[in-house]
Image (cartoon, rainbow, N blue to C red; front, side, top):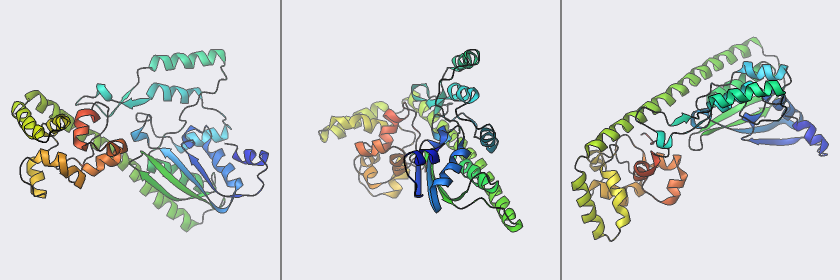
Length: 340
C-alpha cells in the first residue's frame, strides 16, 4: 500500500508508465490508500492493471461481496493490517471444491468446518493483543462488483483512476481491470447524471452475475441428480459392457473401455442429438470418443466440449475426452460441466 515510498527508497525518481498488480489487490487492508499511492508514481495517462479472483469460483464463494463502505472505513481508519473480523470471515467461510462430498443437491463448493476454531482465534487475539500479521482476502469481488467499487471510488474523489475496462476471464476464474490515471476531479451535473446511469447499469449486472451463478449451479445439480438416478438404474449396462469390449478390443486398446462406458451411461450424452449433427456409421459414443471431441462436437444439448476444455486446461493438455473426464474424475473433484 506504500508503493510510492518503496519507489522513493529504491531511488526511482521518474514516474512509471504502468503498474501491474497481480493477485495481491484482494489482500490489501486499505485498497484506497494503494490506489492513491499508485497515482503518485505514474505518469498522467499511465495505467494500473489489476488481476483479482472472482468470488464465485474460488475460496471466497460463500463470502459476501465487499462494499465501498468497507473500503472507506479502512481508509479513514488508516488501516495497515486485516482486522480480526476479516480474518474470522475468511477462515470461517473459506470454501473448497466439493470433491467427494458433492451430491445431487450440493453446490460445487463446500465450506470448511472450522467455525469454532475461527471464533476461538478471534477471542484469543483480543485477550493477548496478538500483533502477528495474518494474511487473508480483505476484499471479495465478482467482476461487476469490482467495477462498481472502482467506478464509485473515482466519482467520490477517493481514487484518481478512470476504469477503462474490466474483463471477466471465466476460464481462469478472475477479472482483469485496466485503470488509467486521470486526476481527482469535480463532476459537472451532466457528468454526474452520466455516472449514476452507468452505476445503475453496473448494479443490475452485479445482480445478474449472482443469478447466473445460482442458475448454473442449479443446472449442474439437476444433471447430477439425473446421473445418480440413471446410474442406480444401471440401464443396459451389461449390454454396454459387452459392446464396449467388442468394439474396443477390436481396436486393441483396452484403455478406451472405461471412457466409452462413461459416455454410454452419461445422462449428458444424447445419441440422437449427436447423430443429427454429424454423419457417421456405427456407435455414437464410440465416434464421439475417437473423433467427435477432437473435432469440437458436442455430445448432447447440455454439454459443451470446447467449454469444458477451456475451463480445464489440464484436461485439454492430457488429450482425454472431456465428457468422459467429467464422468470419471471431474464430478468427484468438484469440477463443473460446461453447459451449452
